[in-house]
Length: 218
Image (cartoon, rainbow, N blue to C red; front, side, top):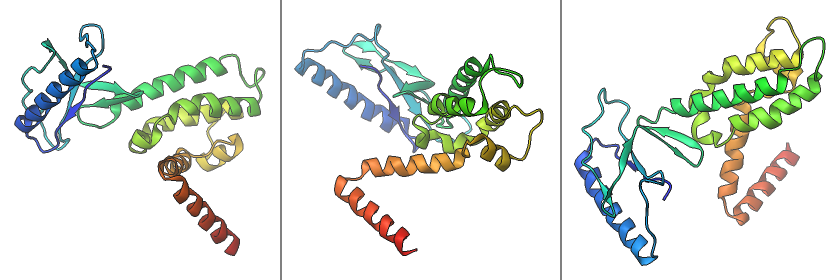
């Protein structure tokens, strides 16, 4: 087991505790059926309790839950499929984590480049989009829209480095010259792709045909 997550949005810890107790019993039965043993000391088995952001204080903690007689820890944040979720779902932990990764990758790629030597603008732009932005846009439809402002300074500095400029210029102009589309535009494209992947093949085909004929008509 890599993680167990619980949530309640109505501020009712008693109901959440009742549901989670049933979940623990079901997991225990499933493990016994398939002859599996969950080692809570070795694996990251924890519970993340999510409560409404409007509440000034966190709700009272749940009582200790057990899985095969082993206690499960309560966590303030948890990493699920590469995305950090915190108790208030404000995505701050995820944004800070991705921003640090982007800065590390970008500094490593551009460390030997200056206005007088190193990689040219085209090479830097290509590396920026394929390496750095790939880290930023991982699971972006889930979290990035609420934290785009976190990356404004980073993207501005990256464009300045790509262009080899000494001073900042207007954002639309720097995006055009560095061949880096705005985060908001790229995010919308990712959301559309994400939705299309979730549609059945028949629906995707019909949607593509309708878009093609609509564009031809225009």
